[in-house]
Length: 183
Ligand SMILES: [Zn+2]
Image 1 (tube, helix red, strand yellow):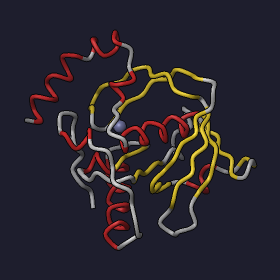
Image 2: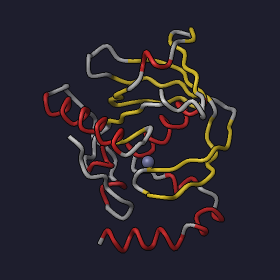
Image 3: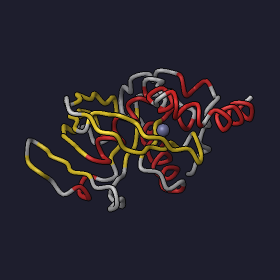
Image 4: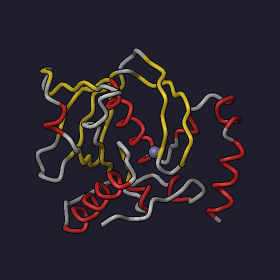
């Protein structure tokens, strides 16, 4: 089921997600709905907060983003990205690498807004999964960026918090309009 995406201005986007405990039917349904909603909106990631639920759960799918490549390693070995997409990450923990890079980013809760964001280029992510097995992987490129963007959401952090003040100022009018519409 496609759910409504929460727009900037709604306080749930600033809520820190509660840890996902047992994988109940409700958790599975939420994950499926988040995947449906992300695909319908042509996104590469979505956090539970963006459908109004403050939980440590995010979905990511970068398999169709050939123009913005990603690489992924499991147990230190390169893997075929498509075999691991889409990902449903529960209670993810991210260890950022030292090297950083700038790339453009958007967010489904901020329609028609993009900005360059500086983030670590490589990450290691450990998360629980719906099947109980868990994942432990390293990523670069768009996957690394998407996972970090979603992890921020789970902690109530938004990409406007990571923009340069000039980039944020350039979007000020659009941001004000969104916030007004949310009231
Ligand atoms: Zn976002």
